[in-house]
Length: 196
Image 1 (cartoon, rainbow, N blue to C red):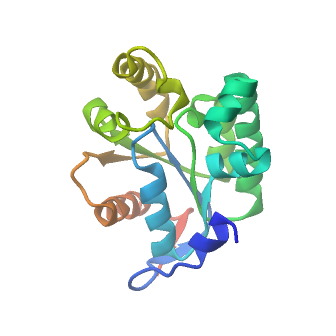
Image 2: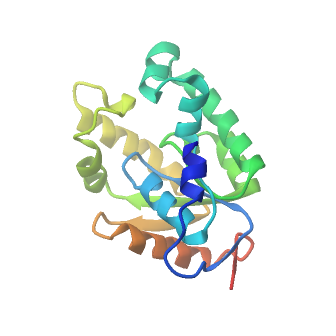
């Protein structure tokens, strides 16, 4: 059973708040909570949870770090664009993307055309606290991972700010509280979520 099937089989606690009309695409830095919040949001809405990195790994039968090491970042980004476009075309749900996905204009355009982007806006200290003990981030395999993260953060924030919706992630809120924040932001987008 794929991760997509497993997650979509989970039921939300309480009533589903509305009918999803477009895919909700979680964007932001590594460590912002895109997967955790996206998975919980999908359960709350009773829709499939999709993860572009997981789909790339499944197709390649390799991990993201292995793809980076063998084929390089440009190859990975090309596959990422293809996977995101396919997932947006195939079904509605909640899609978590890798931290670099929203940087490509092509990805931003297809996400805006077919769904809605939600930027989980977490500060640098929150991100560092979440990623510093993990060795699964190929871009942070440097001599000074904090400086690397800071550089990525400064470079990427202006592009994340182009997202359709922004939700603050302060590092203190529980996942369910973050889901509530995303749902509150989606009230401004009846084209995405039709409320009951």
